[in-house]
Image (cartoon, rainbow, N blue to C red):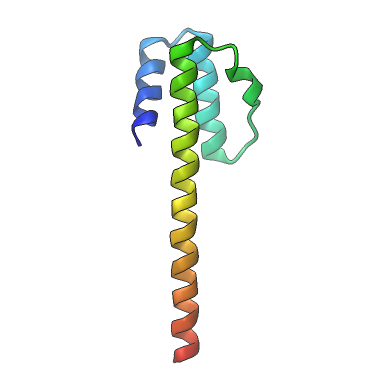
Length: 84
């Protein structure tokens, strides 16, 4: 996931900006499974906005892939259990 590195770099280089605060809040919300006001990203500068949107897309894809792998593993485990 490269977008998380981009967000980390942006926050480190621009720690006192509103964009960095929003990015930090988004990352914390996703990590903790809490809600986040997506409307807050719309007024970000273009570079920060694009990094944030890419991050959301990559995070969602990653979660989807992990979920599918977990579902497949659980289905295989259930089949193994019934075969025993």
